Length: 122
Image 1 (cartoon, rainbow, N blue to C red):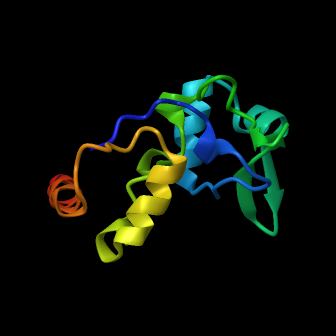
Image 2 (cartoon, one colour; image 1 turned 120 degrees about the horizontal axis):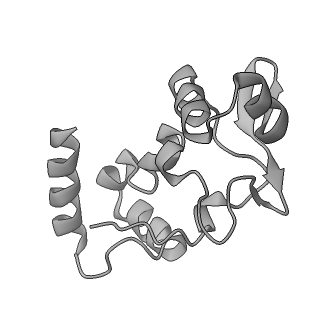
């Protein structure tokens, strides 16, 4: 159904995902740094919203692949398996166009069936 290729398509843009406290704790543990060090080097805070910095149009942690893959935020781990896929085939097709990790072998109904099974296991 999906296998991350770490291509960086989802890591591009002028914004990144917002971090929740669990994301921040996981990132700190993974990087083996203090909260202050992580905040200063990798993150930005605007109106109490913490996000990863952007460098050259990508998330600061993207360099030919995610450098914190095992410590990344839950929203990054969720993508591209977004529940909106289940409501509209056009959503799946749009994600397929930008994500080489999405299976092209499954038709829409089969993809939704496997995705629903995946969600039930979580």
